[in-house]
Amino acid sequence: QVLLEESGGGLVQAGGSLRLSCAASGVIFSRYIVGWFRQAPGKEREFVAAINWTGGNTNYEDSVRGRFTISRDNAKNMVYLQMNSLKPEDTAVYYCAADASARAWSLHEYGCWGQGIQVIVSS
Image (cartoon, rainbow, N blue to C red; front, side, top):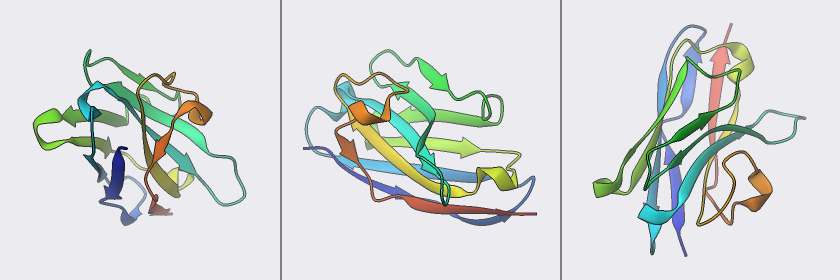
């Protein structure tokens, strides 16, 4: 089992930046695809970004492309989400997820999830 824990959330003003971290423990983590998802109040959970830990390829949701960057540090079992130029519509609970064979954008295919961390962007 892969255990995931998010950190780095908080409250920022529009235009500011945050860096979310996802710390992982367990087995075969370096072979897992890792994704970030978010859920705003009253909304469905949506895909944000994903990274393949073996190939290093990344995927982004259109609204965050160019503003958010997903990266990895396999030596530390960490995945990061650098969020720049934050907008109020980025306000959500952000979740780190991992799976051995999930498609990057398909949240229902991820088997392991963190608890989520709040990001609030004020206007």
